[in-house]
Every structure is written in structure tokens, then in C-alpha cells.
Amino acid sequence: MKHAENTGCIKFIYISTLGVYGEPKAIPTDEDHPINPIEKYSMTKAIAERTVLNYKYPSNMTSVIVRPFNIYG
Image (cartoon, rainbow, N blue to C red; front, side, top):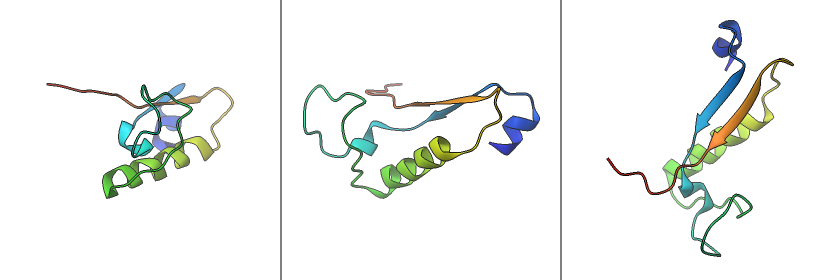
């Protein structure tokens, strides 16, 4: 993220995974579902999400986390 700051980036987009939710407690699963990853890949994605959310961005920079569902191709 530090490199993004140095390039003049104004929005940092992190691509995560629906796996951070773990076993769904409700279907459809929405963004308010608790984070409870059950595999290593999803655990590391959840840690990275926390890093993105807790990073101290410059005032002109924001971040967003995207959790794609049902990717094919």
C-alpha cells in the first residue's frame, strides 16, 4: 500500500474471497455475515482484509474490499 501512495493512487482495491465468511449461517450471504474462515487461504485473506482496513491512509486515499462470489472462467 505504501507503493500505491507513492504513485498518487487515490483508491486501493483489495480482492478477497467469499471464503472469509466460512460456513454460511444464512443464505443469501451478505456483507454483514460474520467473518469466520475455515481454511488457510481464507484465513490469510481475512488477515489481509484487516490490514487494509486498519492501514493509515493519506487523507486523499480510500480503500475498498471486494469479495467476489461464483467466479467462473
